[in-house]
Length: 419
Image 1: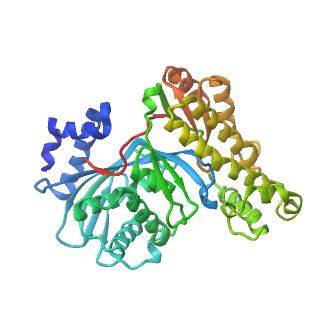
Image 2: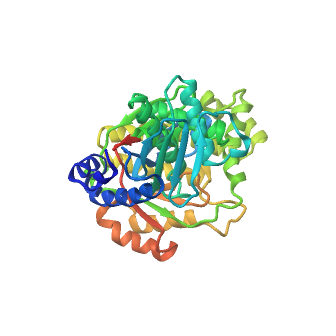
């Protein structure tokens, strides 16, 4: 369609399929992006419209790196693109707030100097398309994103899935599955961007809705979409950004994986998923002398968290929201007590995540579900919050953590898609 057709009822109806009651605001957002596209690429071409959401980790805190189980969900904050197909292999991407970039997709060699840059993601996605026998080519795109950077909502995965979705629909008629787009995105991030991420973020962004993932076989993870509408239970998803300092936390994050691995290695395996819990309990006296006590506590968290993922998915499937919420609270307490990722022992007087959880329990005990969100130590917490409590809760939290600390979200059923 022509870019001028964004401001029509027909396009509004297309937006309603993905955005529901937020469609009119989104139409204004797409109109604003169209102005950027016209300035950069002109307004005579036929253009197409794409969206990829951010994601939230619902259950499975620090389990994926030991081949565990997770439950994640797409959210209603997304990255969107207006794109036109080109007749060559040049990809031009102008992302609002960032410098324009150009990638020649005719050159898909790994470039070390691009590590950590968006160029690497685009080049890596094209390389994987070619390796798998899919079509790819050039395009011009203007992109904007509402996925909050640094919030644990996976703005990078949303970007990767968006690029993969553009290529899927422009050159492959949308025939590549959402799961494969996720795998392609992960490949680009691992091999070209050089970040050793798992597959949870990309899968949730690409598939949409609630997604249960089992990483026992990391090359062929088992992925199940769980149908559940949070709005039916009059709840919203609230992410609270505690404003904690992420500097110098690399060792804290790495220690969780290394300590879990150390327990498995003592028993002759590489990851905990290859070890039965009974083996850990049987030889705990021996293991702790080698690994230390915290490693065993983190291993116990891993095993119980895997079970909780199963319980969470089953509760959603049965529409048992009370069971879901109680299990979320269990997950949060396990992260705090056993996985110990709610503050860093290097700076014990600074505990923003722990304080946010403490205050949330005081305000909402018996009403809501809450837990640390993502990596932990500093950052965000997640709250499944009755809509009737939103105003009082967010007002109280903003007094402590700042005016821009609370984000009220919903779970989005659509993953990466063409509008």
